Length: 502
Image 1 (cartoon, rainbow, N blue to C red):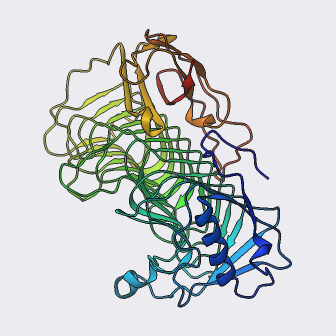
Image 2 (image 1 turned 180 degrees about the vertical axis):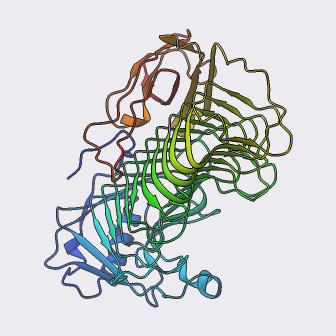
């Protein structure tokens, strides 16, 4: 059994519903027993479901039943004893287009009706996509979280292993909040994890022969997720995803993720991803861009920071793609062995302190209007500028820039610091975010569930944040040939949470 985390919801109902009261676990269909058990938990107002280790495995037939675990009850924890496996089958096998509406109505568990305070943990959740077939955009789901007006919130799915899914292992199409996935493994899943929710944390998940992670929303954290052996020619980590013109989804952190050879794009910050933060990610091979800022959509993607990342063996190391990706900071990255180290197609970029070494071109600007370009390492004859070249005077930034984004009433806020002066401490004004007398804790994305880098009781004065290098966790093995980098003291991102009042 895994240890609890501060993200785990507190389940207030003490009753324990043992799975063997209702289900046989002999690899015959347990759908009826599962539904009876969930009905009992709903009548109780929630509770704890222990999936006892069965004689064989719990089996659920989705065909004709939609989701055997439909309307999963609020205020409920469901967990498995060591070695417990659930197996669901029956989802349509057709791909996108003709059957998309149908396939999304099949899977194992569906969370809706505005349910909240749900923890699902320590289970092996298997489907019948073996031998593996890459079904394009099949919308069936191992765990489905409904959209408004039935959207859920405060759901944690952790320490589970999802295997052989024809569609999504975890699917929350949009409108929810606080949908957290922690330390899960996704193995041989045709679609990956798809969560469109605000204030969500995706931490230490492993993706093996799986499409990847796609997520929309604001104030999210994506940290220490590892991707290898991709299932298809898609983006492995796509964050953003709201193509309404003018829409903005600010404040997400993308820190310390590792990607071993994407067949297309490694990381893309897509539509409406603004004021975001990409730091310390390693992309070891990509068929297109290692990191791409913006897409062909018309929604905003401005004021993002791309700092201290390592991009090796891609077509483009860093590709500031969208003309709406204005005010992008590209600083202290290492892009070597790519065909192009940097390609920039948007105005007012700040490109400082990077190492660009491309096989064809180190640096190419399609748009250079208002760009600041200095202190970068590249071969002198391998910088190309197309069109206008209205570079700003080469004056480096100074001082300290800080931003605190989000609301602690939703659980967390994110902190972003650009410490150009390399000060040893930075003062953080949290007026209106914390109230005097409240206890708080600040975590680094490399160690979200470990020891806070800072904690105390807010007195009304600015928080004095120490600025020091941060090493990646020694116990987190990555699939890439390149380890995660040690982060310096010039750029820092943190997660702030309220932990009580004195």
